[in-house]
Image 1 (cartoon, protein in one colour):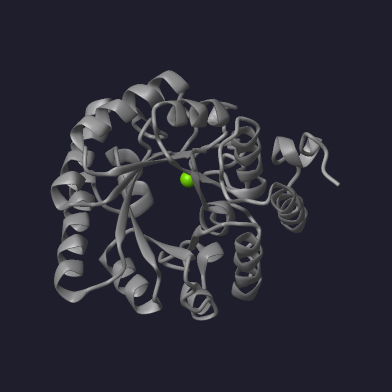
Image 2 (image 1 turned 90 degrees about the vertical axis):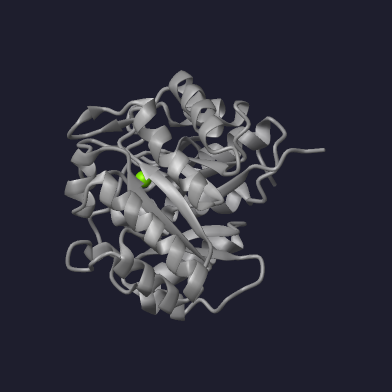
Length: 301
Ligand code: MG
């Protein structure tokens, strides 16, 4: 049987959040719809952050209101605190992706709270969901391979958070290489360590291509048995705390590599390449995915 690799499209959130040009909600809705037409079944659609701090993410409620629940489509809202959880529930997201940083330097500057406070926040949200209801909760451990302020992040820092998530019954844990400093061998070791600490959770990996290692890291993750990866069409994104960051792993590059090897992803590669080119042009951003430059192989049509 062909192995299916689920790719969570994060362009509308992690991609656009880190692009200089803010797009209005209606344009982001159209972007999400085109991505779904290209095969995305699970999309990081919005972020419930303060729009004064992150103007690129303003209008989350408006976007969710324009996307009525659709069977087989999961629209994820990013949640950084309890206020974000309240907004995520009210907006009707299909999933809340709660972010806990692995290291205090980034935790305090990005979310205004310490790692310990964020772990407690995760517990509060899981507890509130159990009594009050709400969408399924997944966890992303950000800066899981390195912190732009504190430097190296140890395996133990990541494992401690994963162990607590397992205790809380969080069904999916993602390791986010927020600034793009992971290498394939560390990826494998960290996956094995997190799996041992949280055997009940599905693992998802989130890579940035800051230093050209994202595709190699994705390969290592798939080889280590991970079936869920984040990617951003056109390689959109970056990180305000990672100067020169070239963006997220490009969805079309990942789909191409996996398809060449015989994996199923459910994506239409030609449509993704078109979409990546369209959005890079719209945002006035040079560069982007390798598939955007070279096209697919074998040639289609
Ligand atoms: Mg990211």
